[in-house]
Image 1: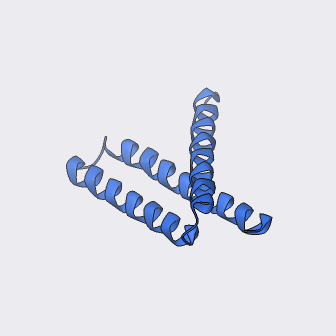
Image 2: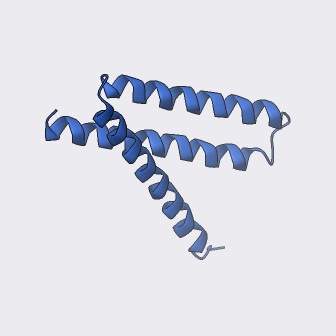
Image 3: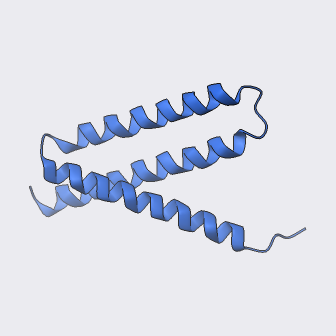
Length: 95
């Protein structure tokens, strides 16, 4: 385990977190206009979850340290998405 592989897994975890939580935000916004909200909710949940779990499993290479690094990156991705959405909501809207 070298620093480059740890950093790459951390960044991949961030990317997975951004993917997951941006997809969640998109799903919640789309619920207002969809004709099939249950199908959208369940389908989006399983698609996002399978991609993230599969990505983490591929990245861990059977090392628990890599798994923890990926999960830490995933949580950092969550913080990035939530702070970005908070900044967007605070911006004044131009008409």
